[in-house]
Image (cartoon, rainbow, N blue to C red; front, side, top):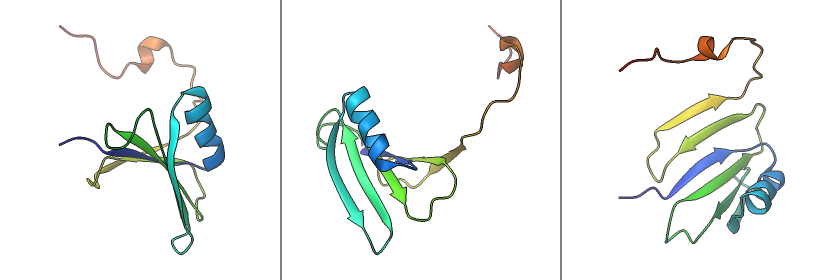
Amino acid sequence: MRILHTMIRVNNLEESVKFYCDVLGMKLLRKKDYPSGRFTLAFVGYGSESEGAVIELTITGTRTSMILEMASGTSRSASKISIEPVTTSATREQRSCASPGP
């Protein structure tokens, strides 16, 4: 079993495709509009989908806040991450998630 793709919801599909292709050097593999479902998918990757995992960029017509939803292949388990500005002046030690250990 292998990961087929990871899905990332974006607010601006054209800018996201430009970033992944122009900055990261990926190629736009395919793009499909679904007008009845009001969403568009764009698949980008370093190689073909048959050779390795790719990224699915998704934009929906009802998007109101920026949330990244990551899902792999046909597995619908997902983790959602809200993007919020950091407003703390905590030191590096205070931001640590775990105490140092052996």
